Image 1 (cartoon, rainbow, N blue to C red):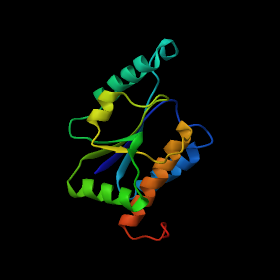
Image 2 (cartoon, one colour; image 1 turned 180 degrees about the horizontal axis):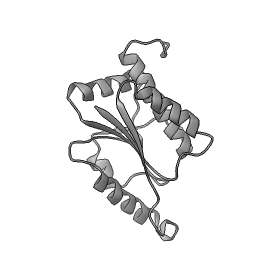
Image 3 (cartoon, rainbow, N blue to C red; image 1 turned 180 degrees about the vertical axis):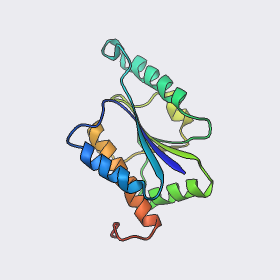
Image 4 (cartoon, one colour; image 1 turned 135 degrees about the vertical axis):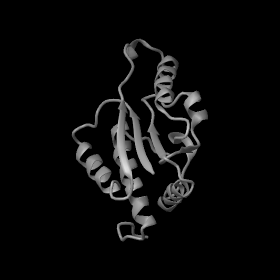
Length: 157
C-alpha cells in the first residue's frame, strides 16, 4: 500500500519542513509515501470562497484514481484516537488498498463534491490549526499509527 499526503497550498514552510520530512522518512519504513502539493489556482485572490473551493475541488478530483481511498481532513468529520487511526490504516491494508490518500484542503476547506468522494472524513480536533501545522500533525499521527501497528514503543499509553 502507498500513502499519499495531498495538500492544497504553498510548499512546506521552513518552520515545519524538517519535521514533515522527518516523519515522512519514518513512515517510509512501513509504507511507500509521498507528498503532493496542489498550488492555489490562478486568480485565486479574485475568486469568491465558493468559486475557489469548487476550482480546488476540480483539481483534486482530477488527480485521484478511482480506486484511491480518500480520507478528507474536515472540521466536521469524525474524531478518532491514535489507535483508531492505526485501525483505519490496517483495515485499508487488509483490503489491499493500493493508495491511501490523506487530503488537506485549502484555506476555506473542501468543496462538497470532494467530501462526497471521500470514504472517510476525519477531524483532527475541534481546535483550528494553521494549515502548515496540520501537515506536521498529520505526518506525525500517521507515523504514530504505523508504530502502534508494529507494537513499537514510540506510542506510550
